Image 1 (tube, helix red, strand yellow):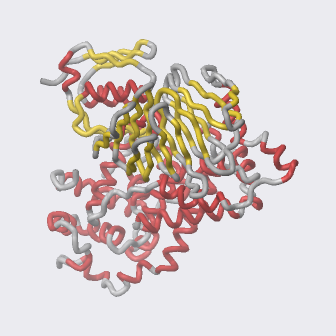
Image 2 (cartoon, helix red, strand yellow):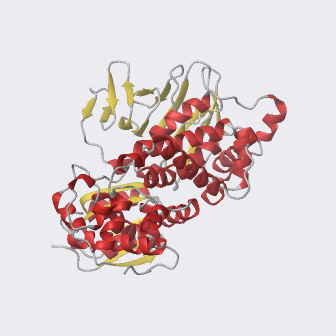
Image 3 (cartoon, one colour):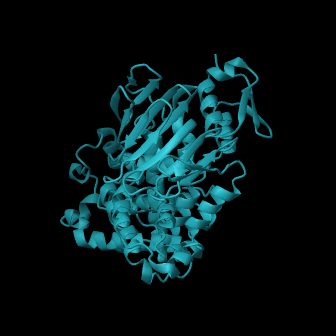
Amino acid sequence: MCMNSNKEITDELIVKYLSGDASPEEAMEIVDWLREPSSKVRFEYFEKSWNASAAKAKPKFNEQKAWSKIGSRIETGKRPQGNQVQLSWWATKSFKIAASLLLVAVSAILVKLNLPDNTKYTVLTTQSETKSVILTDQSEITLFRFSSIEYPAEFSKKNREIIFSKGEAFFQITHDHEKPFVIHTPTVSVRVIGTEFNVAVTRNQTEVSVKEGKVLVYNASDSTYLTGGLNGVFNQGKKINVVDNAIDNNVWSYATHKLTFKNTPLKSVIKDLEKAFSCTISATNEDIGKCKLTATFENDSVDKIITLIAETLSLRVKRNGEVYILEGEGCP
Amino acid sequence: MTESIDGEDTILAIRDGDSVAFRQLFNAYYDGLCHYAFTILREADEAEDVVQAMFMKLWERRKDLEIKGALKSYLFRAVYNQCLNHIEHKAVKKRYHDYNLANISGNVQHPDIFPNELDDNIKKVVNSLPQQCRTIFIMSRYEELQYAEIADKLNISVNTIQNQICKALKILREELKEIIV
């Protein structure tokens, strides 16, 4: 017989859910419970046999694709009009979020610049924390630590242009055929219609990694298209260098909170974790870095991830503020 | 932010036409709702269609949005109802209409009941399940019957069904360690 090893979520409830017999309330419980990484093992124990018993694959849902379908229809929907509605916008959630991002963020420095076309630009600079900003066209930019972008309070009628002077950022740009989105870096410009990609900028180099869709990268002398999965490196005064399949999907995990490892040495895992989260991880023994890890983490805290990794590899974790220390034998 | 995403603030914001709040709600629940719809409909594409249609409807009717309690409950309830409508519409179960129940409880093998592409080893293990366990598992997994329907046909309790399917999955898992990775 099946045992009830969890207080609320019993094996029977998991099975009932998989069979398509869960009530909305029960499904909510399961879905909430599944946000805990520790739940996955027990859930998958049943899910895998359930799927295999009818030769089915685990379903995958593409939220971004779905949103681009729905979002385009929402754009054409009616927007708030008139003074009264406009006023009430100040009390809405998006205003609160925008306010919390722009005002509460201690490290964000706001400066107003007058650029040649007289558009007023806002400068957003991050220090030791990653920040997200949602622009007026609903595009989202996640700015990595120690980075800086400039964007207009309102886009012009012709285009959507921003300036990216240094650091790294992940862009989720909404579709608008009429108004392409253009990012100007010191070395090149990146032009997109609507897609997701990562850009890392230094004074004389720009690296563009495309997650989905197509982007056009150009400067005065050269131009190239990059599509999903491609990575392009652009050096000042040099030819564009495109690398196929060189993308490490963990590049943008500071923005997506999704990390994937496939037989990855722990040394690299630690590097990725340190980038995605503002923390330091050290190992007391060089052999620890040689252990291999295969795992996927989504929306988990760094605390949970490190604890899980340690459990998997029979290591111990010590924590000292933002510093994690891994102890144990490691792997040959 | 995630704590209050299904709160009254979000309902009010969406009613006011705040597409950012709507997108956040979408991001927070799209995956979970699709998975739930998938368990009922058993087709990922159809599950996504149902969930997307539900969100579109929610946005189109945002002005008349009267939701008591958590928005999350509303979403799961709406998806559930839509799935049931969808099933009725398609009459999914018709495929197995002619299947003779008496045959399942016998010891004869029934290759027809399994999907064509199913691994033979899995068929073998399903066929070797204890009789009641096998009957119930086949009705739920391959005939796609609801627990209440199985309970009705076999004159047993829903509890028994849960236990037996649970048992079947555990046996499959143990017997097929190499195949089910």
